[in-house]
Length: 202
Image (cartoon, rainbow, N blue to C red; front, side, top):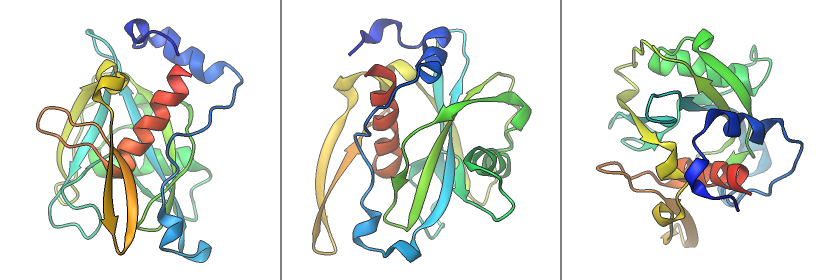
């Protein structure tokens, strides 16, 4: 793998998406263990990479505590695909606009990562986008409790990657976690970040 020292550079980030190559995902999700194929619905999230003077960051949200799915958890902006959506990028940009008020004009889509199947029954396509400030975000108070950013260098450092295990409905589930300050990034979000890490550093 490449040295993590120069990873945040924008030119390097772009090059990882323009080079023709295939990278096996580290995490694919285990939603298929609890749901049949007909129950798994398409969805997309935006993996927002923000240009900052001190380096690139990844924008994340903390969901509000009253939501039915993933209440209080750390997530990417995104959601289920609608019939009118032409592609995963369109779903991700539409949902990001609805959830955090992110204007699509501020996003340059770089590409997609491997799909991840969640236990809540979604086959999620992560869409990586490069964001140019000012962002002028307006989070939806019903869905989003907080928006924050994590340095990309932190997320790409293997020292900050955890692999844990828990029993859920009689099955053993393994999941990744990347605790950052007061934020516990885990589950599907951490799994997709691990795939992003693998995609960038392999």
